[in-house]
Length: 314
View 1 (cartoon, rainbow, N blue to C red):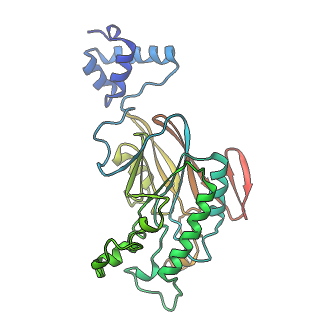
View 2 (cartoon, rainbow, N blue to C red; view 1 turned 30 degrees about the vertical axis):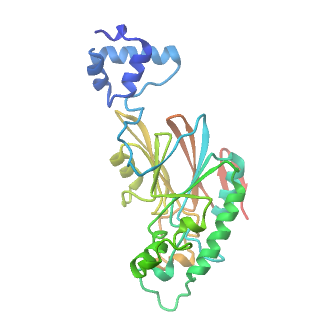
View 3 (spheres, rainbow, N blue to C red; view 1 turned 90 degrees about the vertical axis):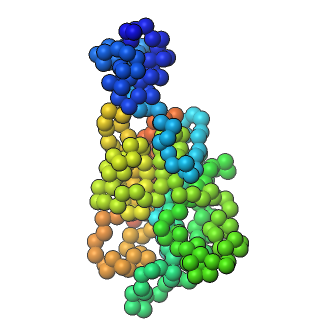
């Protein structure tokens, strides 16, 4: 059957649900050249872009992933690796986060993990006589830190906290040493931060996967989207970027969300005062149906720039 015999809607749907234009041609039983011609014609006719692989496959996501679907264009706020330290969390990036939240009024706010540091329950030994906060001090600081963020967000914003490897120390210490305390209020982060949904991964509008970490390489942004096959945002390595990647499925991004913490703060004494390839900042992602536009925001000690305007920070 020639491509022209299929109606426009069927052609578009077939291409978007195919892995490539050649795959679409096989499904439509036409030559790939006819697919190219028909695709160009319909893109001009409807002022749209038609890409294979645009629609997510039914089995693309982990069955335990949190899912959020929102109608209409909206902004998404991503930040992470705060390693909240008592008296140290009001960093320039923290102020930038609150400023940006008030500017864009995000529909979804995602903490990408490692808000808890867990210095005293780490498997790593203490460095000399370094002063480390108690768990109670970390808890109190996190309540204050998160409360200020909540005040900056719209009331209807969906708040998600993706557990990082440091966050998991909170429950992991108890579950391994005194498992009898399981279920008692206060032993799980979800008990004490009730305004946040907790998970290990989040899928937004069937187009963006958020999780704390995936590939741990220097070029993790590239490797993450290459190996996952989808738009993906991660934290963990404190680096900030939106790495574009293009193949026959179309354009997608590997996003890394930087860190809210001071990169030379007391949490990171283990770096032994060597230079670190980290970045102080956060990411805004504009979502329109199944398309995304990521905007990494680099925060300097006294200012940051967002959508063409420079903002001062305290």
